[in-house]
Length: 136
Image (cartoon, rainbow, N blue to C red; front, side, top):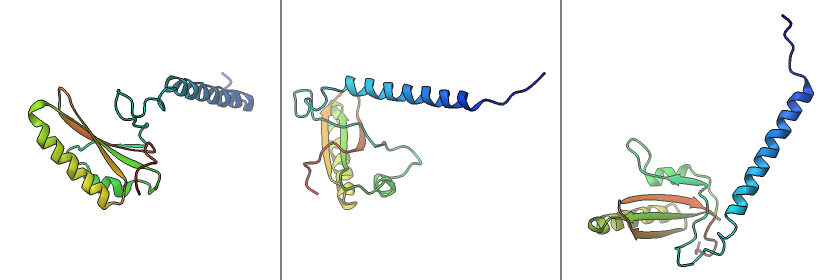
């Protein structure tokens, strides 16, 4: 049995195929989000850009201020705290969202809070480039 190593042209063709796949995938994502800019401020709710980093509190994980200090310091990025509350937990979720907002302000990160009613209560934060008009 003769074992041959891969030829250079085969590796180049594989790399080009991968690049073509990624470019095509990127174009599909961009075309499916084509109306995203128009959705800003619409009846469907505030526009939230795709997150460059997403935070959810998990047991044993970092607190929000620790997590923010680990992120790349970029003045263009803003933190959006997204809170969903069930009817009986409105006040508790709102207090937690305000606490997170204060932590973000202490870290000098522009912040906004989006809160709405839902079946289940949850809170998370999205760090993204979606709000250039926020005061810095």
